[in-house]
Length: 92
Image 1 (cartoon, helix red, strand yellow):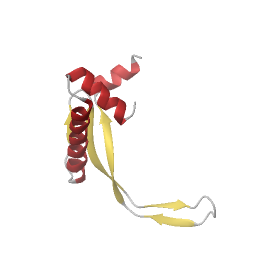
Image 2 (cartoon, rainbow, N blue to C red):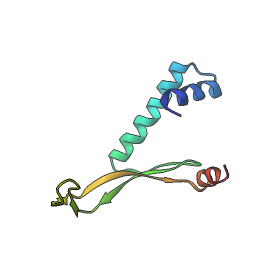
Image 3 (cartoon, rainbow, N blue to C red):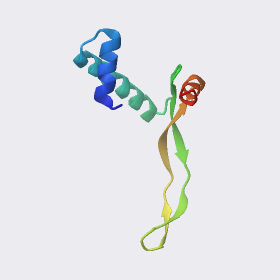
Image 4 (tube, one colour):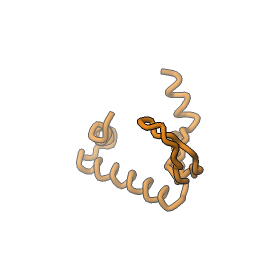
């Protein structure tokens, strides 16, 4: 399912127009991205938790040349699915 299909599903389930559903989906995505970028956790019951996770600096290797290089520490977005979500996926 892509973004357009998700917006169409939201429109069908809520009675909104597709444009309204897409605007609502955009607002949700922008809210989650903004909050996680600001260092907050976003927990959506039944879906999961979005958060930042630090990634330590480490050594890596260029696969083409074999040269060793240092990979800088960074912060990455992470998602931890809720138990109900994991069960629903496992049941199918």
